[in-house]
Every structure is written in C-alpha cells, then in structure tokens.
Amino acid sequence: MTRTGDDQILVEQFKQGDESAFDKIVKEFSANIAVLANRLLGWPGEVEDVVQDVFLAAFTGLKRFRGDCSLKSWLFTITINKCRSYRYRQMLRLKIFSRAADKDSSLSACAADQRPIDSEIFERVRRAMKTLSPKYREPIVLRYLQELPNEQICRILGLSENALQVRLNRARKHLQEKLKDLIE
Amino acid sequence: MTEDKIKNLLQVADRAAGEPGPTHISAAAIRRHAGHRQLIINIAAPAAIAAILLFASIIVIQAARPHKPSEQKQIVSLQQELKHLQVKTDAVLNLVQQVLEEERKTQRLNDLQATLASIPDPIEETQRQVDKTAFILVYQADRLYRQSNKTDSAVQTYNQVIKLFPQTRWAEVARQRLSEIKNKKTDKTNLEGEQIWKPQSV
Image (cartoon, rainbow over all chains, first blue to last red; front, side, top):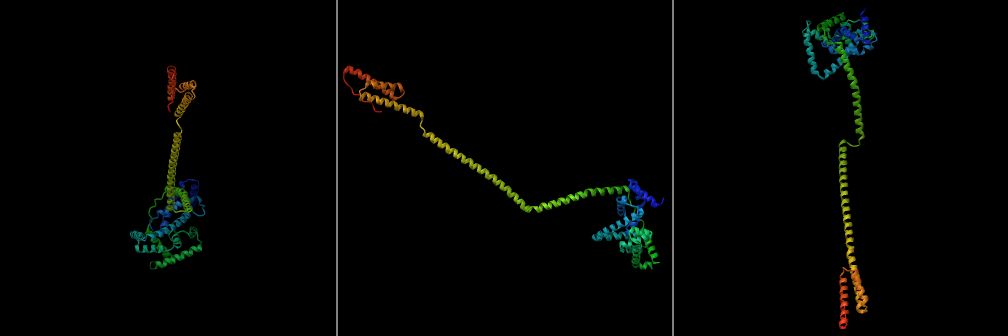
C-alpha cells in the first residue's frame, strides 16, 4: 500500500471516531512539520508551539479533510499558515520588546557558534532569509530545503506554476544580492 | 548555476542549524488542549454575550436616569428627610389634637360642674318647701285664732301641722300655741279674764 493510501486510511479511521489514528498521524508527521517550521521561521530551534498549533488545527479540521491532496501537503499548508501567524505575533512582540528581541537574536548566534560551519556564513544566510518576505521565503524553503516538486508546492501555496516561478526568481535574485560574496 | 549555489548555501546553513529541538507533542495532549479550547469557547462566548448585555443594560439604565448618581443620592436623602418631617408633623398634629380634645373635655366638665352647681339640692329644697308650708299653716292658724277668734279651726290647723310636719320647728310652735290655747281656756274658766295672745314673729 502506498504512503498516500495509508494516510487516507488513517483519515477515514479518524473520521469514524478512532482517535488512535490521530496518534499515528502525530507520530508520523511531527518531525517533518517541526523541520519545516524550523526552516520557515529562520531556524529558531524551538518550534514546539508551532507544531502543537498545527496538530491542534489538524485535530479540529481533520474531519473536514476531503482528500483533494495528500495528508502531508495538507499538514504543510497548515504549517505554513501557522508559521505566518507565529511570525506576525513575533513581529508584534519584537516591536514591543525590542530589547528582548536583541537578546534572543544573540542567543541564536551563540547556538550557531557551536556548529562546525563558519558562524559568520550561517548568520548571513539566516539574516538573508529573514529579509525575505513570507511570500518569497516559503517557495524557497519548500523548493530547496524540503525539495518538494513544483506541483506540490503550487498546491500547498495555492499558486499557479508561473506564479511559483516568478516568486522563486525574485527570491533567488534577492538572496543573490544579499549573499553575493559567498556565491561568487 | 547560481540556483545551484544558492541551494547549496541554503542546505549548508540548514545543516548547520541542525534539527529543531525535540518536540514533545502527543496526540493525547493535543486532544486535551482541543477539549480545553472548546470548553473555553463554550464558556467564554455566553459569558461575553452576558457581559455585553449587562454592560448595555447598565448603559441604558444610566441613560434613562435623568439625574447623576450624586444628585440621585441627594434626592433620596431629601426624600428620606421629608418622610421624617412628615412623620414628625403627624406626631405633633396628633399631640395638638389630643391637647385640644383634653381642653374641650375639661371645658365641658367645668360647664357641667357649673350647671350642676347651679342646680339646688332637692333635699334642701324639699325641706325648705316643707318648712315653708308648715310656716304658712301656723301663720293661718294664728290668724284664725287671734283675728277671727276661730279657736277650733286654729286648733285643728295646729294639729295638722304637728301631724304632717312633726320634724319641723313649726310643729313645736304649733304645740306651744295649742298649749297656750289650752292654758288660756283653763285660766278663762278660772279667772274669767281675757288675755290677748300675740303670735311670735318668724
């Protein structure tokens, strides 16, 4: 049986009241969702709140899931929406508590110091990604980090193929400008 | 070419960032959280509606009131004072009415006492009438005896006075006259002299 077929069975079991099916869904997708959220949010490291929100929304809305796309794509769509909300909340919080934000930023940099890669390169890529607006960052993450096919990205983001290509081009151009010396 | 470099750079950075922290997400916790959220929604929504209705009703009530709360309090206190004054006034009026009623009663009693005082004592009046009647009888008897020489009629009248009014002093006078008449008759027969008898004045 294919992966998608297994997912559909789990969804059907959940719709019929078998809550153990949701346990299996959480177990199967929580890691992938955590990784995606981590990338979408610019590698903050702690994404548990977002993952919990994603599965909370999934628990509430799974009975309305029609199976038009794979369960993974559906969960990724929820994750993207939750990350947008999370970033929006973070932005408001940063505006209010700018000092705390600076402290948080320095903590992230310290974490990066412990990695084998040069901390300066990591920090520059991270900052470049953060300067991208969500509408450009999300295609980049799904395309180059999640390595999803364009068709699936289009379905997740609700974009046409052309719109996706336009966004990817603009995002690449932006990153190229920001990371010119590293790319060359 | 540039796309590959960008992809490579991003993947290097992603590996450097490492895996996200361990997520302790469990389906049970999600279900519990969803239940709590639903409970909050179930409670919060009616509570919010009730609060809004309460707030609106308070606003409506406040708007309907023509006076401010302080003025309202003053009015209430004035109304209470007015009630106290009314109670006091009623009490004073009752007292005045009671005093006037007492005065009227006293005046009426005085009048009755005066009227009663003006009424003569019937016993005394009766006694006086009895005495007067006895006097008149004695007086008429004296006139019969001395001016008309009707000694028998006079003796009969004296005897009536003694019989009818024995307790009066005129009964005693009548006895004296009868005694005098009797003595005079005895003396007349003995001395044949005539004595002139004069009745005593009353």
